[in-house]
Image (cartoon, rainbow, N blue to C red; front, top):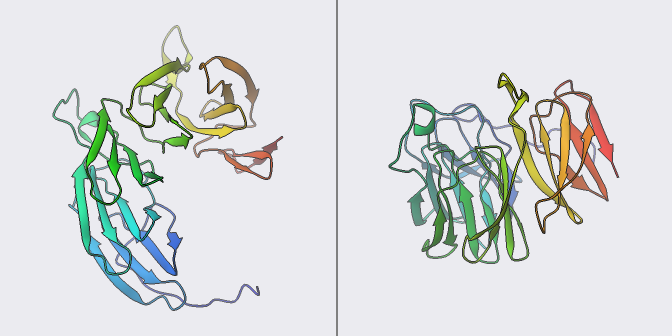
Length: 263
């Protein structure tokens, strides 16, 4: 209410993702693949969990996902770990790394998109080319697809919408992972010379439109039913973080620090 500092707590290192606050606890994922659970009121450390250390990873990280007393941790190693929020006890763990390797970059199994927990299921995607659905309680792998990406999936009803490493928006069945449609987005600002690659972020679902934004300063709206492009909008600069929807408006934070809202 006043903006006064309530508590301050040193941690073991820097974090590249926002903390997750749920059930009176704060969960912070460090760059060294260590998760710290703290009391939200006092800042007291409740427990920690150390994942597999990685010598290299992509820039950025994902926040843990929390629901029903379970925290799901997306490590840069490609490991997905589920712990009890009250004690840190291990429930299950799995990996989203793949055997197939095409180059050094694709070797990075980094999970940079925040996992999604929806109705007792966990959906996660890794950079290494694998997406999977898990049972939240048991960790049983319900399905998997050879689809890689860096952004969080968006779950709506019976569908999942993902942005792939190949600059495609794909609509998938929540229950089976079956791909219903794929919409390819522009990959380069100069399509003839294939220079200036476009980095896309999103998608988010706003009403009956899927919206993604790119580093070239444009946003695109796509039909969630068919993948048909519905329109484009010019932004003041490139966008590196996903748009946000709130109160009937869509907000874009451009790379020049300008905040733009559309209704």
